[in-house]
Length: 500
Image (cartoon, rainbow, N blue to C red; front, side, top):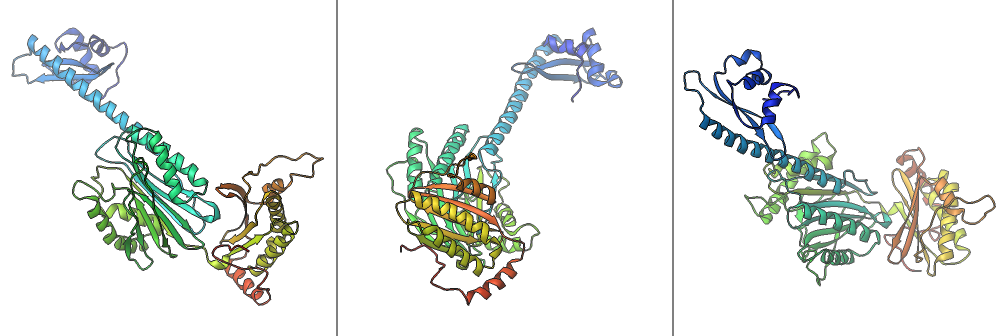
């Protein structure tokens, strides 16, 4: 029973005294109305009022009662009441501390994992995180989706061994390190190799499993490297679920281990499911049995999600958690799902440009022809200007041919210029008398978004422009009209650029 205690009342005096008292004493008689209410005081004839003192403060009051026909409490009963009150108070205090710790652990997990996830071009992403119900200890499960140059995306799932605040802290360090390594556009094997080195620097026994997959929506390919993590499941467009055959590798932190990457097809409409072992493993089944159940039931989940009002991928994630009956799970669960839409080869154009003064002019001509073919003449002037500025800067600082890529989606036109210079562009406000350094200023003013990414072989500078209002169907019709008049030698569309 919870009641408001007046600081100047008789009940506060009993609580400050800490010791139990008989209800027949004057101080207790004055405290009972405040505790029980005036109407209930007459029913108390034989009782003991005992404060509940926790580790640092009094947290409540216990009232011990006997029926009127029984004998009254004696002095020895006060000792028993004091012991009972002490043990009860300590138990309640521990429960409160446990609840507070559980809340802190839950908050720690939330702050160290992404709460939102931007949707990359050519893929849809959804995620779930469900903490263990049977324990308040923090876990080391994490997930991530990291944008990469060329509209690729790195899909990450990992699990630090152990369940403690330390595991969560290590998870945060490894996740941050992996984001930095992924931004360098290293191969998946190199990313995990350097992550393994970082785990060893954190101390002995700091081990984790991790699966790192890179999806390229242009080539419709998936490159996967695994370090002892449960293999992913690929749900094909026809509903068939397949556990991908990926070399398991050794966990992160073991050291001196070579990681192997496999390249797989990622057809449009397929869904990749990455998860931690808490999804399939429980006290009733091992992880391999759980994986098999996941594979068998994913097709059912895919069918159910198609009938749901939720977005299909979101519904699929919910169904995956529900069909495996994880309500009583004793381990944390992280889940990352990616549905591959892909980008059609006809929506991508690549060129190589020599490091010559004529390259910006050639770039404008190729951009003009491609925009005409795509029915995007309305964007010709701003895009040509932006391409000229970015290509001019790339040619000036590069020692090898510059790559130029144009890519269209339903919403934006994206241009990427790559060179072998490690010098990153820096935006600054030009002075009135300056004629140099205006390139990035113009890009910043005219483009919807722009940025640069450092690569192991140089960098890529990119910008995006919003497409005009006409529908995709109208643009496609205009593009068909231009196909018969275009000189095929002036542009080409390929899956990967080829050296001239």
